[in-house]
Structures are given as C-alpha cells and as structure tokens.
Image (spheres, chains in turn red, brown):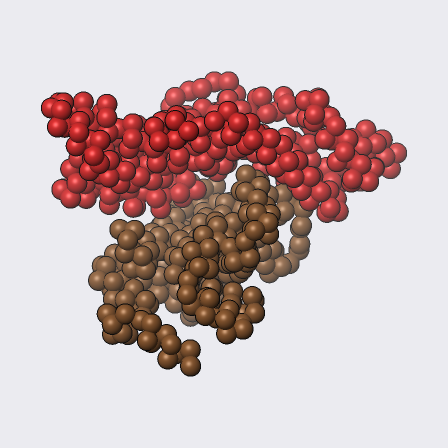
Length: 309
Length: 301
C-alpha cells in the first residue's frame, strides 16, 4: 500500500508540471498584461516594471524562472498588490475557503449519511420515498441559483440573516450559515442516495446475516457491522467531491462576497495578475490530487478485501 | 450474407425483433417523471427557439421611461423590466435560448472528442491506450473551471457572438474526459464480441470498425451522459456569465440574468424569474437523464 501511495505521489509531480506549464503559457500567450491599463504609463516606468517581473523575457524563459522559484517554495510577488506576495494572499484567503468547504462536507456527511441510512432501513416505505424524492430535487439545486435566492428570502425579505460579506479572520457563524447550507445541499442529496443504495446492499450480505444469526442487537448490527461496509462508496465519493466542494466554494465565495481564495482568483484572473492566478491554480491542483489519494487510501483501510493485499 | 449469418446465430427469444431502442422507449414512457420532464424539455426548447421571435418586445429594446418596473399588464411587461428598461420576458426567452444553445453545443463538442478518444484508446489498446488514458488522468486533476476562466480572460473579443462561440468551445474542450472513460470501458467490453470479429474477418479497416460497429453500440451510455451533461454545462456557462466573463450585453443568458438579479435585490422579480427558469431547466434535464438511464440500462435500477 505504501508503494501504491508512493507511485501516485510520484505521478503527481509531472501532473503538476503540466498544469503549471499549460496555465502559464496560456496566460502569457495573449496580448496585454497586468500593466496594460487605460491610462498610458511613461515608457521608461513600464519598461522597468516589465523588467522587475521578468515580463520582458521570452515566455519559455519566464516559465523556467517560475518553476525554479517554485521548487524553492517561492510563489513570487503579486503583480497588482504592490506590497504582497502570492503566498500572503493565499494564506489570507485559505481559512475562509477551508472552513466553508469542510463544514459543508461535514454537514453533508452527517445529514446525507443519516438520511440515507434511515431510507435504507425503511426501504419502500413513506420515509424512503420522501428522502429519495428530496434527494433527486436536491441534486439540481446548484449554489449559483440557490445562493442568490436564499439571500433574497432570508436576507432581504425576512432580515433573518446577513446576505454575505465577511471581515477577514472574523468567522461569524451567522454570516457563514447561508453559504455553508447552500453549498451542502447538492452534496447531501448525492450522499444520501449513495448511502441508501449501499446500505440496502450491505444489509442483504452474508456478513450481516451472520451478525444477526449470532443474536446481536439490531442497533449493533447496523452501526458496528453494516455501517463501516456501507460507508465505502461514500468515502470514495467524498474525496474527489471535497475537491469539488472547493471549486464549489468558489461559486459561493463569489455569490456571497466572501474573502476566500476563490474570490481572489476571480479578481486576479480579470486583472491578469499572473502570479496570483498560478498560485491559486497550484493550491487547488495539489488539493485535488491530495484528496483523491487520501480517499483511495482510506478506502483501502476500510475495505477488508483490499486491506490484506 | 452477413445478415443471414447473424440471424442464424441469434437465439430464438431475440428473434421477436424488438431493438434496444424500442425496448428503452417502452420503459421510458412507463416512467411518469421522465415523461413529464420530456414534455418540459420540449416546451423549453420551443420557447427558446421561437420565443424571442414571437414576443412583442425585442430583447434589446430600451424603454427609458420604464426602468426596473415590477411585473405589470401595462404594455405587456409581464415580468417587469430591468435596470436598463428592457423587457424581462424577452430577455429571459433569449437567455433560455443562449443557455440551452451553449449546453447543447458544448456537449456536442465534448461528445465528439470524448467518444473518438475513448473508442480509439479502447479499441487499439496496448501502449496507445495507456498513453491516452494517462493523459486523461492528468487532465482530470486540473481544476477546469480555472482553466476556462483563464481562457476567457486572455482571449478577449469585442463581438458578442465570437465570445459566445468561445464560451462553448472552452467548456466543451474540457468536459470530454468522463465521456472518454465511459466509452473506453464499453469499447473494451465490445472488442471481444463476435460481431467485431466478424467485421474484421470480412476485411473491415480499424477505422471502419470503430465508426460503424463500436460507436453505434456505445450510444446508449453516451446519450445518458449527454443529457446529464447539458445541465452541468449550462451551470458552468452561468457561472462564467455571473462573474462577467460569459455572454456580453446586449445578449443575455440565464446566468447573466441571475447576476443582474443578484445585484438588484430591491427588484426581486429580476432574480426570481431567471432562477426559477434555471431550476425548471435543470430539474427537467436531470429527470430526463435519470429516466433514460433507467430505460437504457435496467440493471442499474
């Protein structure tokens, strides 16, 4: 298993290099740049600026310089915020994005998982039908549509909750409530469906029949014996999905005006702040690769059939 | 001659002659949710195709004396007007048209690349397959929404139509990966089948076998994927428009209308209409896709 992890880890390096190179070249291929503004700069200043950020060199050489710095852990300076490094910007935004994504995922695992188990235990009865109908609708409730509607209803009309905006480092639960719930709705829907299907299958398996035959109390059969097996598909879904939530939180950050790195990325991309764009893309790519790997490894740990191998 | 051989090879039960598609159709029309959504998709398509032409107000007509008015019967501004004084029925119909168009066109781009890529990889196999699928693995770990955003910011055009083309090329070019995987899996399963061997024995070329025998047989999962992919792309386009990188004024998409509405919360009709339209579209397409999956692959139920 360690060898497997190591192999995947090594495969991540060329993947990251390809990502860096393609985004880098793509960004630099188009005319214009971070210093192309409506107001014309004196040519001397523009020349100095370009020189400072190596923008006067050929793209290939810039890419090599960038990768060289990257290997030493240097993401470079921001091209629009004069006194900030890319790392500062990411460190400032990361807590907001992480709290959003992780809370939404946790909420979805508890609620979705719980609903799924309930539906499975009441298969083909009223509770089951209600949960599954809600789940089908829930999948089609994207944050992009639900977010603004929730702001309108709970913020503008009812005045129950703030419509968004958040001061840095001030994690106010009321401000985060709507974004987190909005982000978790589609996740709850998917997880409850997965959980239900997998639980129904597990309850029919020989292992569970044996557990029941031993005379174990029903609660123990379900929570101690069935749940760990039934959770497998959920685990293998949750890893990549967590990365997806990060991308989803990106929509949420824009809709609710939250200062996460997703919001920073949108601003940086429109201002052609090359280094910040690269930095954020890298962070997300590393996260995606990491979560995929983590969910694979967890899967192996949970599944006795692959644990032995 | 090959027809004759095929008929002899078939077991008697299958000789009743009901194709996969007829079977699927029968199962589909027994599913009420799928039928309702089929009607909904048909109605939405008709609205998108003919609505902008038939409605009394053009989408770019500006009524200077009626800026951001609430829905009213007066002058038939049934859904009100926006902050520029343009009729919202007209803009919503156009938005629906553009959103559906982007969804369908980008799906077509994704399908073409994905089906060919997957079929070639699966059919040729060996190191070609390895190389092609590793490429897909690598591309999978790229956060695509970033890619599309970067692409949209660097390639700036002044023509709204060229911009629109760019939107669906960009989204389509990144959405083919899952398709390639599905098709490759199916192709590997099909490659061993007798009818492919028969075609090869009859002297068909590799390309002919892929296009004439493999591709038609993987169409089932492809149709399902395509139906479910349209809403994904509509959402992607909406997000682009939401952050101002998608369709440009005076054109509109459901996403750009949503963005306008979010900025004008004191005029809730500007938000509610595109939001509801979007939800109906997404629900209908998702239910239809689910229905098609159940119909085409009864095992999955």
